[in-house]
Length: 232
Image 1 (cartoon, one colour):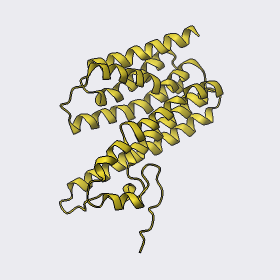
Image 2 (image 1 turned 30 degrees about the vertical axis):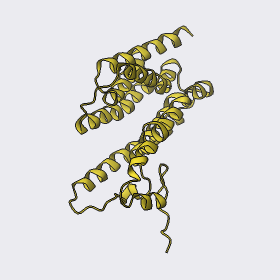
Image 3 (image 1 turned 90 degrees about the horizontal axis):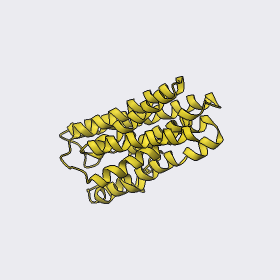
């Protein structure tokens, strides 16, 4: 229990500091989680902790770079940055579990890596397809090709897969109790991506775009599936 309190305090401190000194929470989010993973690995070095550093850092730094390149002059309310730190602490529970316990089921670590890889693939391919669509001067009103024909939000789905994979590798692989206690991490991330700041809020504005309601009628919002056939 003392170790758990120390790790929890360390993680929360790192997350809040990074969020507080960074102007935009979206940029700080990936950096904070990467530093949290690094801190957990330094606290309790093991092959799995360092593997999680690689998984989280490659995802988080890519996310922060993408947001930074996209550009934002909006500065966040400091209270939002503190809340972002608390959110990063919550999402990082699988990393904390890995720092406190050795893996009980090693095969789950590699299953988690596989799920993580699916998520990163959806993010990277989805981004590339969206960038190509935006460069096309003769593009259709709505992007409905590639991954975007299977899900309206491949990036958000990919983000969710990344954290379900990290939960498998860091939380559930540590045993049933750490797995159950850290399950809030991927669940919270998925809820956040679908209903809070992700897919659902974006849909409200996208539904005003010509052709988007028809696209939405045949394409899954989140979990990929083959597009529905249009009624004749």
